[in-house]
Image 1 (cartoon, one colour):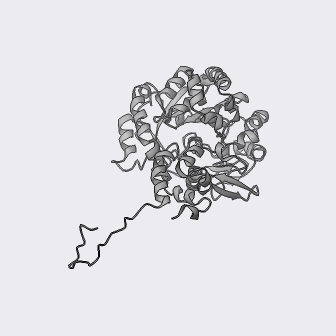
Image 2: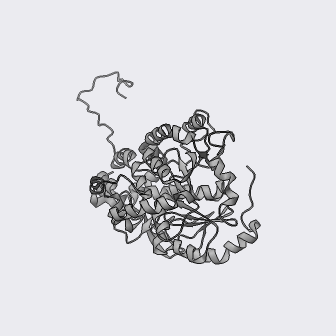
Image 3: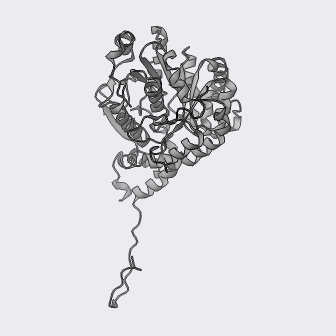
Length: 361
Length: 60
């Protein structure tokens, strides 16, 4: 194939089929190394099974709201809507949205973390953030998830204070893949920690990586769906057992006018194909619910496809209240958060049977 | 290939075999292995495997 023959999104589309392989190649070794390093820490703590037993005490009624860090969550200020509506159901947040939630006065019931890399500690406030780190790593200034992080030092200081104040009231569903520095920060802050293993492959196969990990540490295995937003949804419906789960900030994409350099994999894509061929990797998706086009990349496209596969088989009713992005299709109802708060919260509190009927497992 | 297939005659001209070079897509996919990908894996048709209920951390 000649380079000039590449069409928009062509390389990106080819990559979607290989994303699980790419993910394991990128993070598998690190994640398993972290799991081994975390063994002493998790032995003294609780497992996700304990969170499941406490589920009836988490959030009023049969609903949960997932808050991920997609750009829509700040555009529509979903956390503020929940606070103003006095929402009392369970709030399950991705760690990347923790600053957004706490700075809006919303303390999540459960926070979820899964990514194995060290920079994740920044979402909790990094006690060791150095000027050199700020200078050498522009990810937090450049990323599209939260503009506030362009004020890196100030936001980090604020996060340290906010997290230290609220962590003891928050349950942290933490993956054994988490970086030991993330674990240390969360311990120090005082989160209530509940551990689980991410599935790397089929745990039913005794020779699988996941089965070996489970034998080593005895923890349950969770299908993390490739990303922390999907994991938060999984925890809300399969661990907390909520019958209706509303999603916010699950864009799995970018607004169409997002500068390419603010997309998650921009640097990697430029290094691979050059600046003039970035469009061969990024893809555009038309969302008919909002009559608008959104930009996506191979990872987000894969997250979206994987989510739909999980949602189709899930016991819960899934409402996408993100109000934008690329997640729509069978198994996911699209609705505004205001619509969910007006129509579904009280109904589900009064009549849990109004949600999808549970199936035995 | 050349170690498996052997002709039973000598060619009059020297034959050079063109190697099957990688396409740009293949190169990209190989390099992408090292750089792209999600935070964690996805396993089709699974939710949570609770495993042994007497496992680690259950006292908590």
